[in-house]
Length: 424
Image 1: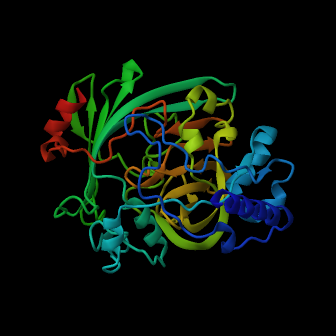
Image 2: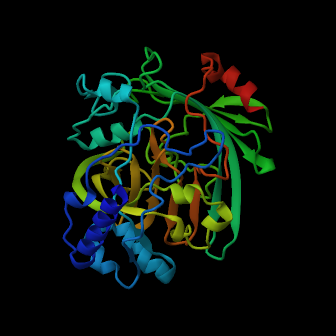
């Protein structure tokens, strides 16, 4: 009986979308968070069973009909249709608002909102909560994303790929350990967001090159501290340039330091403005892509769209425009945050003349064994070179990230001495 009811709902939804371009919040339905592993899930396996595998595609947006749905697409998505033609499309599925966080996070969030200090560069509030459950300012959305629940003591690795328009691929990989302090499961009396160490494991010529970052809750009062380890010299040195628009060494110029995980770090180079709350088609519940091996998931121009699931999603839009007295190679950015999970989910990037130069997509899914909603990768498409970068990849091809180790990381690991021992 339940399956029949669902089928009727899906058919009605399909009918209403096919004949009306005017959509409302009723079309995204109610939130139904998945807070525990679904039937058949095995923690020792790399696969996350898709809770919505029975869902059918409602309709497909292509180069031939995308203007019919223009209101629910971002400018970056429209540019993808124009640039890549018949190879780029979006399969639209029913909206399944499955994102969840631990009950402890929700309970702490009832105790009152956080507050911004030092013009938004710092935050004070209930540690481990959703800082701004009733967000009203642009930096509220940014802080909600930065401090969303994403584990405690973390260990894992991920590959990355740079793909040229002729199909040539360059790939690498790295490992990371991290300690998050904004969560209900650890004491936070240090005024920190977290600590993270990363190192390159492939290609061999870069192996063991590493970075240590310690991030505070106030970038003005206590700026980011960073160190790098060079396998050539076997030395650790301070790295004040690990910030803002410096390019990540692996990315061939396709991403910046402050673009990792959507956005991170100090916010003082931009003027931030609310862009409103709208309904957009976004990559969501991306289990199919996660469970697909990369030889199928990567094509020459963009990821294989057949494996991505798009849903009608309520998003908070934030505009970042470079201040007159500042510099940044990405001067105008429009960011889209999932209303439910606060995840940074896509971005349109413009040059100084307001020409659209890049589109970024961070497909999200609920890691229901935590529970936690997070991106399975970040895809950055550069319209001038027709290259794209896929980084921070989590998939069936990669060992699962451990988000909450039984044995916590020692604080002494996240020092220059501990970092050198780990990076070797």
